[in-house]
Image (cartoon, rainbow, N blue to C red; front, top):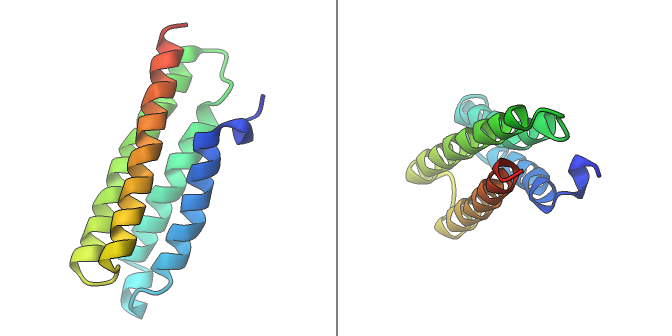
Length: 117
């Protein structure tokens, strides 16, 4: 099995691309400020999952999932700030926020399953 076989990973990679596209519509000065933070944190969610995937030490894998959860919360925070500043339409904000919530729940279930091993 590969990390790419995990549905949550595939969803997260899709979100990274969508977040990137979204941030490129921000005002020029924010593309490299808030936009950069948003791109980095959204990418880190999937990257942390990939980093821990398949580690023979389950506790390391669950730690990586925990870090991914933290990056999810950070990403949602940056999205909220972008929305509050008027850079993200409400419909898009709700969709992104909900998509990250779904992935967060999937990560939580994966972590629970690993802890039962």
